[in-house]
Amino acid sequence: MPFAFYDLETTGRSAAFDHPLQFAAIHTDDDFNVLETVNLRCRLSPHVLPSPGALAVTGVSLDQITDPALPNWFEMMGEIRGIIERWSPSTWTGFNSLRFDDPMMRQSFFQTLQPQIYAMQFDGNTRLDVLPIMYAVHVLKPECFTWPLNGDGRLSFKLEDLAAANGFEDHIAHDALGDVRATIHLLDQVRARAPAVYTQFLQNRDKQHVHDLLRSGHPVQLIERFGGPPRSVIGVGCGFDANYASRGIVLDLARIDPRDLAAASVEDLVRLIGQSPKVVKPVKTNATPAVFALDDADPMIADRAAYVSSNVELQDRMGRAMAQHYAETYPPPGPDEEIKVENRIYDGFYSPADKDHLLRFQSCGTWEARVTLLDGFEDDRLHQLAIRMLFLERPDLLSEHMRSTASANLLARWTDDDAPKNGWSTFTSVEAELQEKETSGDLDALQVAELREFYADRRRRLEAIAAAG
Image (cartoon, rainbow, N blue to C red; front, side, top):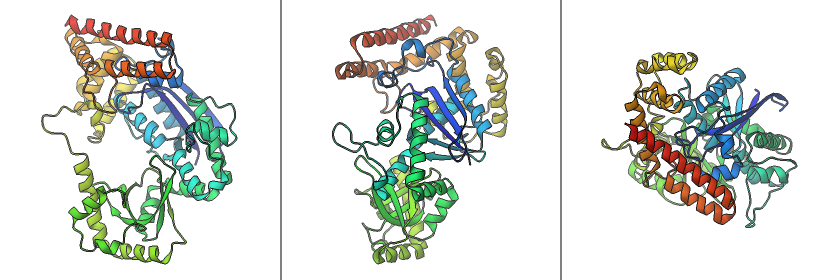
């Protein structure tokens, strides 16, 4: 299957409340020969305060992100959708993409009213992330690569460090196209130096393959990393989340004898899942996990795995416990709690009628025509997002009252000092970040002053529109 290597540069780190400014991708055959290269940019959406840290890292100027000659966010995401359709089926591959780029893409598809937010997973497409592949190589074949250290003498798994230490020269870091080329180089080196790891990850693109491995009762090796060096967990599949079939469960057999769980209730298992160090590991089977069959397990591990494999009732209890654990960890909002539309992305699939209406909304060509389509959505999320998109791109097509109300709501968001962690940027948060970046030397005094004026001007403009109503 061909590969589609891609990377984003964004306004910040929140998938729900930031957006891509640059999308770069290289389509290759399965030997990494380049078939097509794309490099797209869009201008800053009016509803987002870009993070000063993101601007400092990417090095883009305010003139670049506000260039009126660039397409808007809506237009760029529509072009990306067309590229995905043209390149399908492919393996969409990035570096830390499953944690960052992939959720950002889903949110951008959702918020710009694209008909399919899972475009990188449908129509035969699969996903691959080179960062967990590098974790696995470090554990299983460490001699195959040079492992760089950061300024504190600790292992660095940054793309620019790994690529440079292993033969990739002239890397333009934090430019999306430069990062794509570095990612291709690293995966090509894995294929050459650690072919068994490479082959296993290609197999793990198939969700059913991972399901079968976890159901097999065969001991497995799960590679993970939380801050320190990557580590290996020796365990066995022990059921699946009762509410989410794509979340498998691995029991760490080096830390616990499953026979000790014979009389454990679901509530006992919920507590076990929450304890530290973790002995119960969730595994997303549809996210190309770093899980491998272990062919040389010692007799104790093999015996414990056989016990779990034969104990369907334990697996069932563990599945119910995992579902309860997630329900308690991420409880649904209360009846009076406001839910931002961005956080409703997973509230349900669109109806066939709404998918058809989205296609009309995308293809009709003018914002004047899109105004006539606002009331045609069954899903209230889509109606809300369509109005917002019109406010962002053609506010003149909305009534003065609607413009004023939307501006007041956005101003309230930007001045909300109780914004959630990993939420949207506010005037308070960007000022704190400006001070931090000036102190660290990431931004000089002139850059900081320019950014302060930029944020102040955005506030003045929004206050004027809000006051007009």
